[in-house]
Image (cartoon, rainbow, N blue to C red; front, side):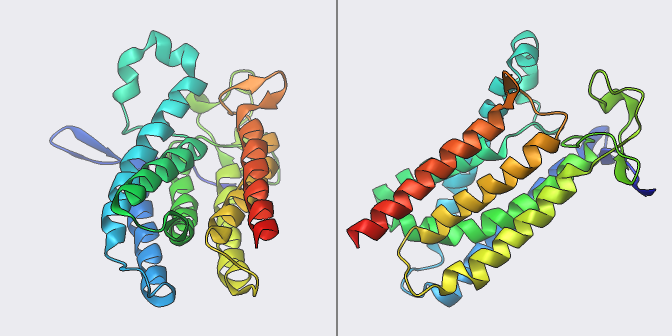
Length: 261
C-alpha cells in the first residue's frame, strides 16, 4: 500500500505562539496566486494597469476570507453556536473555498465598480491566480488532517485518530481527496490557459465563467468521495448543491453573452 504520512499541524513556535502549516500554505497560496495573476495581466491584458491588482486583490482577499470563514461556520453551525469564540480562531483552518469565491468576487466587483475598472476583465485575470492558490491551499488540509475521503487499502493518507470522522475510528488510511482536488485545480488552470484563453470566440468574463463551471465540476467529482463534508441536505452535500447552482449561473451568463453577441 502506498501511504502519505500525516505530519504535525504545527510548523514551529515563536515564544509559545504556534505557527501552523495551514497558515503557511494559505500565505504561500496567496503569494503565488497573486504573482500569477499579475504576470497574466502584464503579458496578456496590456490595456489594464496591472498595478491596480494590488488594491483589487487586497479588497477581494479580505471579503473572500471573511465570507469563506462565515460560510464554513454556518456549515458547522452546531459546533460554532456552542463555541462562539472559536469563530475567530483562524490559525487552525476552517474556511470554505466556495464562500471565498463568492465573497472575493463581490468584494472585488464592488471596488472595481467604484473605481470604474472592468469587473469582468479583472475577474478573468483573477481566475488564474485563484486556481493556483486553491491548488496550493488544499495542502493546508493535508497538514490539518482534513478534506479526506473514504477508507482505502491501496493509496491513502494516514489520519490521526483524533481527526477521524465518527464511525470510522477503526480505519487508519483514507483517500487523499485534498490531493485529488489540488491536481484537478492545476488541470483546470491548464485548460483555461491553453484552451479557453485561445478560443476565437471569446468575451470578457468567459475565463471566469469557465473557471466557475470547471471548478464546480471538480467539486461534484470530489464531494461524493469525502467523508468530512460539513453539512448535508438529506444525503446531498451542501457543497454539491452550491456547485450545481454556480454551474447554472455561469452557463446562463455564457448563454446570454453568446445570444447577445
